[in-house]
Image 1 (cartoon, one colour):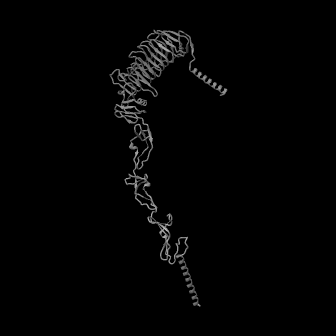
Image 2: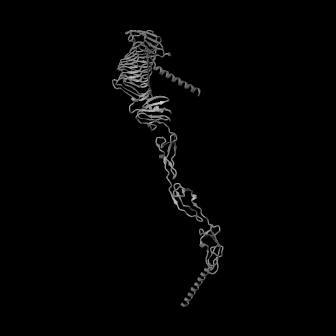
Image 3: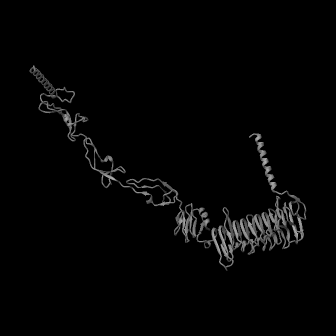
Length: 615
């Protein structure tokens, strides 16, 4: 890369960085420095340069009607006095608290001797945005959101240090969402988050911590008239109860509830993890401490508690439904009929799973684990050998497509090899294409090993011989004969017996030609006028054939051996070209000539006589 290209790349990077910084600067307010040590601004954007001590009375408490962004910058604001509310944000106003210092030590406090009615930050119809710093109070409320006000908490810490005080009080149609930071109560009798009078509270991140050990206290406490509690993330920690809600519905889709006693004392709580989310509930006494007439539902999550349900009152019927989740104790009595629960034992530890959690637990099973279905019907898939599955409930249970009967089964994962199809023969069975698992001796018709077959079902029986009899035939001098046998055209096999038990070969059925054994040599004998003669020949007495040569290669007919009677003189065989053509044939030719001459003479004499008479 040359120098020009390097410089161009550097310029591009510098420009991109400049634009990024400019964009970040555009999102942040231009802070002014606040140097006063005894007062606070009520609008604008300020960065504290000194610690501030403010003494307020009811008439001169800071009230924010516009917009104020306050960067604590590591400084401390101490507000004392008898004012009911230290800083008030009225309807239409907004207050943002930040701490952009490196040490993150910025704080707003009312000291250790504040009036029990003193509130540090009061959003009376206005909005609060707490991004950093510590808001620490020893009065009645640390942060109070009222009259349809709102608060967004993404960082920092809100701390209550007074008995019967509230770190966060949400009232009268207001709404608060916590996405970060910590809301903490440090004393017995105090509250971390208190929700009242048609107010809504959402925990999407951060922490709500209740250090009080009072049995009736809770990290999130929703009074009778609260509107709703939503937990979609973050952590709830309590030395007593986790969430208390007398009537307001509680919905948990993510996060952790860690309570020393009860995770929930509720009427209408639903724990249902969102897709990709996890809910973990740890309770020292019970997951649910329920009121009469309650309807609580657990459809997922990790529940670690010695008891699932404990009833607070028993005047009215209660309904607790468990359709999913992981439990330390059996949830069978709360599982509806159309659901299932299993007891899972691995390495000496036992966990109970319900609903969809059964599948995930089964997928992680290892050899030696035990899964007992305690209620409901379920199809389980396990991908390893050696997992024992039993059914102590009344439903039907299948493991890898196999029904679990009394006594249970131990999983076996088939390692099946394919066997190609083979046609049956007359004597040997063939087979269809199949897959065979040597480990368990099972046969399958498909590669997916879902269609099991018996051995008989994969076998194609031997067809048996369709053999035809062949009669015995004697051999001759020149032609082979055969023994009597039976031949099967289907397989090409030969048998000596009709029962087809004594197999033989084709060669073994053949009776070889005997050859000309009894051959008589006949010498040549000339024919006479009275007797026929013959040429020299050889005669096989076994097959009655005649041959002209001693090697028996030139076969002739019997007539060809005969020399006819001469009728006068002797003659040789006219068919032998080596003998002169005399004898009978010559005599006959001469006689024919003489007869022709005689006939010609008679004809000539007749003609002459006729002419003479005419004259």
